[in-house]
Image: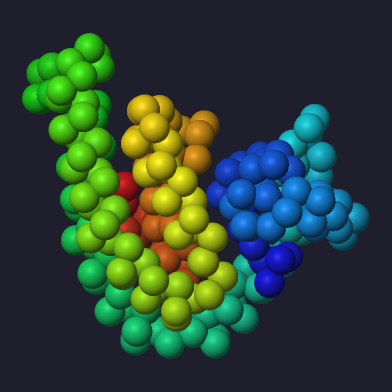
Length: 203
């Protein structure tokens, strides 16, 4: 499972450090370094400075592993969970839009602390509502277990006052983790991001 966890993390991040791989896979830094070295040794990843990127061979290997994973999953249960996820996805899109825009013509410059806190409160409430569904999804696809800790960490950082954990792209923000989980669910159901965009579900 570690090979799949790390290959998927490298693909989703584009390039990944050992420390970020450790977080994404919920493994120790030393284990993450060993795992990434193994991917490089097999030709499935390559070093890019202090980061690692996936290779075409790695994408092929990842596709094989994901097909194997899908074969062992309860597709009907995942499909039902995904329909529920869609409602939460719509709620998160609304929260992120509110974080970026006060209204259609007014960007949020983040100088109104009360407004920003209201948006964060909405996000924390969404997290509480979504967590039971996430547990059920993990029950169907145990490899996704690290996402629970990553979401929890984003909420902890927000409560501690670091508002970059709402939607900052280069951080493990709530929006970043959500986007990656959405990608995972799309893949588990054998769909594509283009399919979801056409259906209005892409985030």
